[in-house]
Length: 147
Image (cartoon, rainbow, N blue to C red; front, side):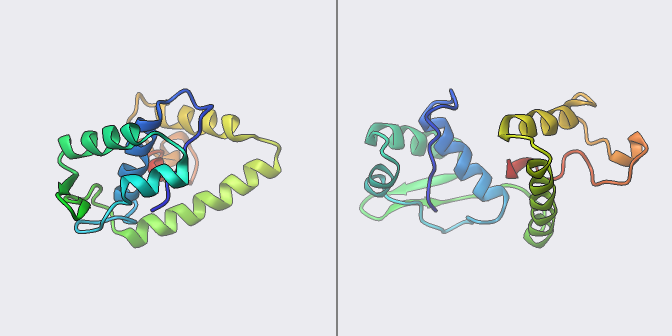
């Protein structure tokens, strides 16, 4: 797993690390028994402070998702999400096509994010489908972890 830190996002770096691990767990890219990168590797690749990485790993450990093993590293203890990884992959592929279409239409990342969030929150966070709105698309909750 390789972390990406967006210094302009306004979200603290440690929370970005936590979010990325949680997303990888939801998408099936990480599972129980997988080893997270060492603090040293994360610092070298992302340029964040070691204390930032330690804070993120502690947060994940407190939530029961990972466990630190003295001298061995930090390992995934529990998974997230219950959707079949093949289903997630298919939905992600469809979403990638949609994102390419949105970019071709001139939308930037913030536009796309705003559009997706508006659909996700249109029903107060519920899982209304586009069919509920008269369309024929997938449920509004599909692909949330991808963005």
